[in-house]
Length: 135
Image (cartoon, rainbow, N blue to C red):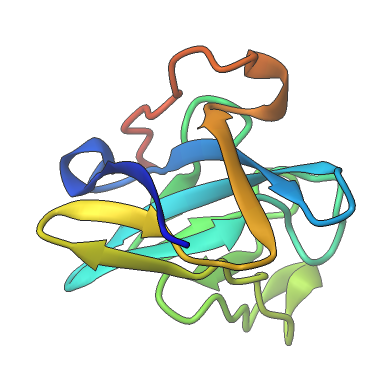
């Protein structure tokens, strides 16, 4: 079942839109939406080098030239494929979350996740943090 997450207008051109999902085991996880030249991608909000390291710490993920930057070690992940070819996370790929975009609306279509609220895990459903942080 598809669940409406946000509008494509809610996803900043540079940065990310943060929301929280519930895994099948009941645990909560954060997901980021990032704008692409021709759409939107969704990734679980952690670096592959250190899974407790968030890419979006609540004020939008840092991005440069179509890549998501890990704020701790500087590894850069391609926003479209999730692949990293540099830094400590080189050779890894972000965990993709299945979404679909229809008529400017973004839907969560990943059967293993249930939408909980916009914003991070600790935001209790408050407004999403979607700054336009640029480096």
